[in-house]
Amino acid sequence: MPRLSEVIAALDALWPPERAEGWDAVGTVCGDPDAEIHRVLFAVDPVQDIVDEALKLGADLIVTHHPLYLRGTTTVAAGHFKGRVVHTLIKHDIALHVAHTNADTADPGVSDALAGALDLRVVRPLVPDASDPSGRRGLGRVCELDPPMTLGEFAARAAARLPATSQGIRVAGDLEATVRTVAVSGGSGDSLFDAVRAAGADAFLTADLRHHPVSEATQAASSSSGRLGLVDAAHWATEWPWCEQAAAQLDEISDRHGWDLRVHVSKTVTDPWSAHHTSPSIDGAPN
Ligand SMILES: [Zn+2]
Image (cartoon, rainbow, N blue to C red):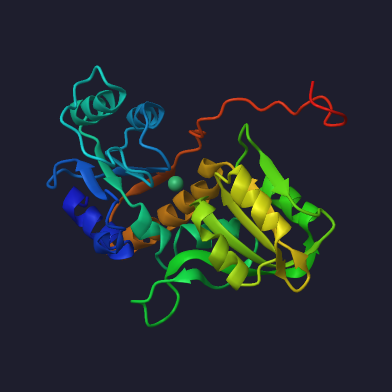
């Protein structure tokens, strides 16, 4: 049975913590380096539902994409929801480890998993990591859709292939436009519009898109085939495929080391939105 320190060393080799952004908070949140690890649970969010799931499963390590504490804290009192998470974890000897922006830019990274879920052929990173001579690491991915399809068909594929959420999929742009080159970025991709335009993408799939960037991006001509189409999925849904990819990577490492490790992926939907109502009619003036 591997110790926590050995499993963490393997995870750090996949997603070196020094490659995380300066503002990020990655690494081990709690856990005894000498503790034996039998079961690992991968999830996007370190929330109480996931900790409860780990408890039920008998997992001794949770690996999440999002940090529990991003800005530091002066208390882990159980009266606060994050403190409650820490208390539950420590009381039951469950370790928590985070791989965030270091997993985003990895090869393979979060956006490779997203592209894989959508059956896209990855061509290159959207924003390459200058320190990577192979040119494979970086933020987001530029992909090819073969054969090409319409923006409407591509959005329908995203709805069918990504895990279901209340938000579902929002689309901006001409639904009949042909989509051949697609940029994808798991999580909030709002800041990547310049790179998406520079890549000549016909469509951009990401999460958390806002009114003004979407309005401007769909008005400005982008690729040779026309204006940029936008596909906005739930943040959680765009990052969840990474959990499956990461679990498979750890499974493979476990086999190589002869570890008897059980690796699970949480199917609990932790996207915070709980309902979505389509307006009865979008014709006519606001009432
Ligand atoms: Zn995220």
